[in-house]
Length: 103
Image (cartoon, rainbow, N blue to C red; front, side):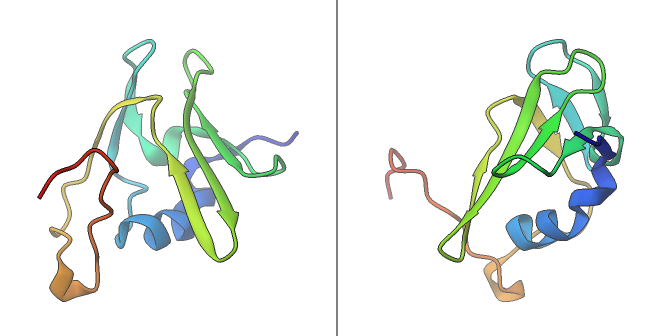
């Protein structure tokens, strides 16, 4: 499989987060490496898109499109920090609620 850099998922990240996240700081949950999303390793030929840590190769993010919905797994990230404008409902961003969240 051909490895790409994190810029390859720029459009996908805009679809999911509503903002350009390629310059966002990511922290690997396994080895603690910190780098911009653009510096991560991306594989797009799997059933979904897999994003791995450049240092330890752990899976950080997985994106799968099914029935018009993009499912996102960010479990491999310890953190993802974006310093751009705050996303808001006024800008068209809806907060995705986790099943265990309470109002």
